[in-house]
Image (cartoon, rainbow, N blue to C red; front, top):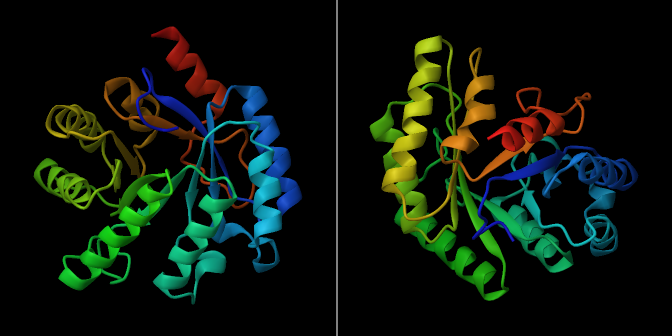
Amino acid sequence: MFLNNNKPLIVGMAQHDNMADTICLIKDSIFAGADAMGIQLEDLKPEFMNEECLTNIFNALDGKPCYITNYRHYYGDGKTDEQLAEGLIMALNCGGTLADVMGDMFDRTPGELTMNSEAIKKQMELIDNIHKMGKEVLMSTHIQKFTPAEEVLRIALEHQKRGADISKIVTGAETEEEQVENLRITTLLKKELDIPFLFLSGGKYNIIHRLIGPMMGSSMWLCVHHHYPGSTYEQPLIENAKKIRDSF
């Protein structure tokens, strides 16, 4: 599981479009030291988004927990949020552990955090249903630009209020000063939240935050075994995250 761990987890992310490459990457990532995997369902071609293929993918984890996303881009583009939610539920039934519920699910909103009461109600019902399955929920908000501490904390508290087990927020840093501030915000979230969190940044100055953040309070590293077309290049290598965690 992703909760109640005594150290940050090293999570190997998979963004391939087919079952065979995803399974190979899972095996390579676990061998390299990943504690868990992350499968981005929106990257899978439609012919692999079925119970048989997903079960084969999750069986390759050999008991490791798995974080799943089903975002609106790539093969998720054009699907309704209800369809994306159904994909999450199917993947959880096939062996997923932690489902990523977008902060603006059921009401697509700039900044990815809806305040629409009907959408929030539907989010909370989805989260409750996932919990009844014995699974865990991460709520995500991708802002993709530098965001002041007060706003980051407000978003995280909203995630917490809606029933998420983990809050994920992705901002940005285009200067060294913004990168240092993001590290400070990490310590603020650790102090103020009652749930675990994952606070990341993109932009020119993101690597220190991504590598050191888990040692300052974030609950996990999102990493890659190696970079390849389609992977997230801001994500550090599993081997580098492992060196940092082992050195503390």
